Structures are given as structure tokens and as C-alpha cells.
Image (tube, rainbow, N blue to C red; front, side):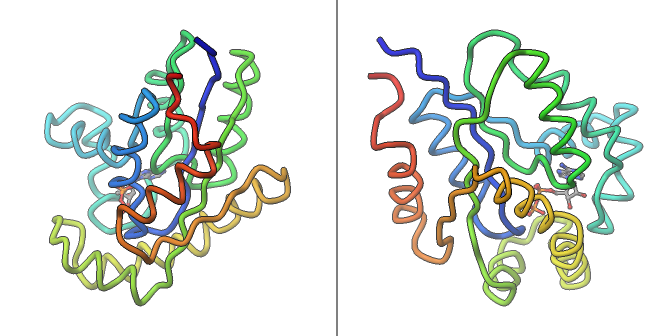
Amino acid sequence: VSRNPMNTIFLGPPGAGKGTQAQLIAEQFRLKHISTGDLLRKAMAEGTPLGKKAQKFVNEGSLVPDELVIDLIREVLPSNGTGFLLDGFPRTVEQAKALDEMLKTEKKKLQNVIYIELADDEATTRLLARKRSDDTAETVKNRLKVYHKQTQPVVDYYKNAKQLVKVDGSPSPDLVRKAIEKTFGGSDGHA
Ligand code: ADP
């Protein structure tokens, strides 16, 4: 059994299919799926202190402050050899740098940084069809604006580090999954 670590990040605009792909790929490659959006929604539903602090940011479609999500990630990142798949983090260069620090401390590396690309008009159509409570026309517009302003620089950050692999997010989920799988070297992750 090769113990190839498969630490992975999915980047891309809201609506690109990060969550859908993350579930499929995490299961296939036995990775711990970490979605900051899911974790924040859970914290809000449970009314934890984090949930209470995050609520207004999530509701208006802006980013939750870096220190809150960085602490959250620090708590849930595997401390053993389990590979992880980050979905929705990092979303700012500040968060990317904090992740680099955490990985350095743990003597870990990123193996896959996958950028799922999707045009704004297509993203908007998908998000409005989804009907999550933060998927209103107004919020979606703001999330895309925030994405371009704050998360696009994260894409460039990993591009400059020569770690970025681009995948077209517009085809069917199955085709996108196959494209991602190919960038993983075609292995099933537990050979
Ligand atoms: P989407 O990708 O469709 O925007 P997510 O579930 O990833 O949905 O995120 C929902 C909301 O949670 C975001 O609009 C933001 O308010 C908050 N959020 C999620 N991840 C982060 C993060 N890494 N940093 C700051 N805020 C975040």
C-alpha cells in the first residue's frame, strides 16, 4: 500500500460545483472532506458562539472574518496522516498564508490545488436554482463580487507557486469528476 498523501484544495466561484465534487472525490480517495460553508451553517444552526458571530456575514454573502475561519480550520485539520480535501477554504490570501503555516508546522504539503472554473452568468443560474437561504439574487451578486475581489488573488497565489491545476466546471458533474480524477494521476487513491 502506497501511502501517498493527497492533501487537496478546491478553489472556484460559488456555484462551480466544489461541494458536489468534494463529496465524490473525498469518498473516492478516502480524504477528510472539510467544507467551511457546511461547518459554519452547522455552527449557526446550533447557535454556537462561532455560529452567532458568523451569521450576519453568511446571510449578506460576505466573508466571515479570517481569524474565525482560520481557528475553525486549525481545529478540524487532521493531525494524523489522513489526507484532507478543503472545500471553501482558503478564500483570502491571509487564509492561504495561515494554511501554509499550519502545514509547515505539521510537516505536510499540498498535493492538489484544483481550480474549478465557471463564468459568472452560469454560476448565478446554478445558485438561484439551488434555493439555499443565502442564495437570493442580491446575496449571489455579492458573493460573486466578493469572490472576484478576495478569492481571485488566492487563485493567483497558488498559480505563482506553480501548484494550480485548472478544471472546466461547466460540463456535467460526472465529466468534471473525471477531469479532476485525471489530475490526481488516475489512481484510486487507495491502491
Ligand atoms: P458558496 O461556495 O456557494 O459561496 P459556501 O458554503 O462555501 O458557499 O459558503 C457560504 C458562506 O460561508 C460564504 O458566503 C461565507 O459567508 C462563508 N464562508 C465559507 N467559507 C469561508 C471562508 N473560508 N472564509 C470566510 N467566509 C467563509
